[in-house]
Length: 590
Image 1: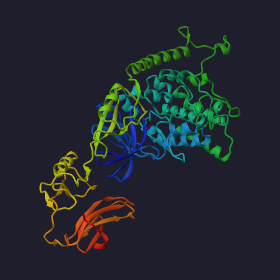
Image 2: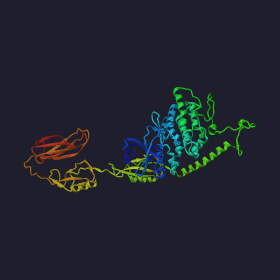
Image 3: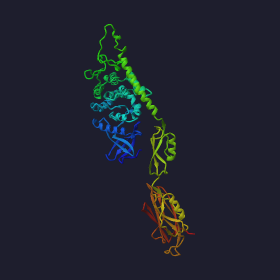
């Protein structure tokens, strides 16, 4: 995929990240003259019209709440049947990667990141919309802890797909608010809950709840008390612990209602930490009432019961009943027990059904083998045994035709059965190196050139030769080792046998000259041509012509006529040197 050109515009430079729905790349926009991000929509979701239509709506809606901390979605496009989303390129790494490498983080760093997220979400929440998928996988943070929030509102598109919502559930479940897993639509308050989970993870290096399945994870978010961050990170401020507890309150009524409300407490706490000020919980009750009234002089931790259940109004106490025994009865059962039972039952019905539907329809994962270097036929058979599909793209290459050059995804990655494996396959090169056919018979030379995709010039030239038998090739154009396009013609000159040229007297001196040129002092390869000028060939005869490398040593021999012979040396057609040898320097010709 790297190096490919999408839509004759986007040059793929680097693979960034991959999820069940998208595969992201850094690309160069040749039209816009900038780098952007492209998310290819993975099969089969890219073939769902309703899913693509909803993505287009999400992109349009995102323009209504612009903010520097929100990733700007630009357009939905398509290349050879594969749709993709174009967005600005967030600078920085996916926060999930930084958590794996660097967590836990200090309180000021976590507050700075959370403030950046809230600043991005505030205009979205002001419109009554929700991000819907706040997690370490959708947040990008650079070295200065500046935040970019990605894929705002994309949860709406997941719901328009037949299966996308089920596929992304395992990734989203650790961050979803209880009311969302029970069937409610994401809202500003549920985004606050998700951000609270992210903050917990940054401060401790782990999620607040762990479970093997999305259903079990949802049950813990609905019923289990939020563990204190100070258990894993004793150095974290107690007030920050309370802030996260409020953000992760079980009911929306007890949480910060939106990112803008959350932002107020986060800023005050960060300022207090920066300037060494004392701060207690609630941070400022007149500005943001706490979920449970507590004394400012004695900061109190919210108990699980208080964060999970909130009475709308105080109930009168029967004088005959002790305060600790006060119970509001409804049909013989406590009201709070009825509420919890009803919600738990509803959630179990919804999530268990979805969980089984997901697991029954989910294909198994297999490890992708390394097919680079194999033939396309061999690779296809190997992938078919693993229930994977080979999708090929042919390119010109010096490798043998049908050889797999690159694969995407790479070896040892895991893919679901039925997934495509994209391979770049060699269709051979349109260029071929001209072989040296001198000394071969004419028929042998023709056959050899035809096999490698070259043609023979129909005009066959002849010339006399003392060194080649009659009918054999004495010269060729282009010269050996040159690269030319396939189907090009090679001009051949064959020997007509030994003969004394007309312009040479029978008594003319004939001597054999052995020539050595080199080692060649070159910086790069060149085509070396050596010509000989004598009484027989006053216009010059080519003795040698081929491409040579630095330090090559060239040897040639030829019979020269006359009292002296001149040799000229050319590099890539340009004269380099010449020298003359007298006949007494040559050897007698037998």
